[in-house]
Length: 126
Image 1 (cartoon, rainbow, N blue to C red):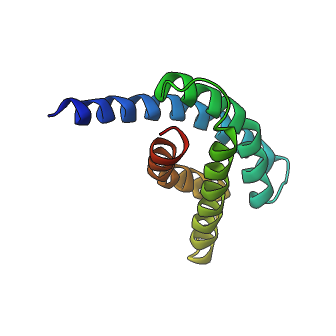
Image 2: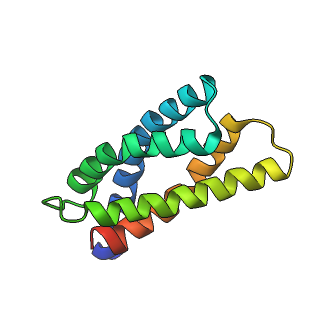
Image 3: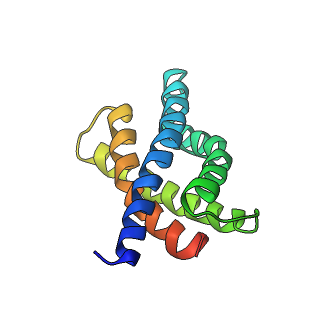
């Protein structure tokens, strides 16, 4: 394995750990909002917005070693793209008969992880 490939592998592993912790935070918020009766689209948006700043700070510092806040707008754009992807996945799952918003949110979260890594690595923190 080349040093570049090794670097990407370590970066991906770190991304997954940091992202998992932030995702647990976001999913806990999502589940709480669903529990109190919010629509899944609003629950997804609110949980995402509340976790986007903590995610930006953690990924910027621990994964991509980027200094400053000049990429927050790009990070927010990636969040918006992932929000739309997540809502699309959840709506598709509802369309095929999945009746659990909790499970739909979890599936969408996992599916969005790789898209998020690629966009953050090659667009936000390049």
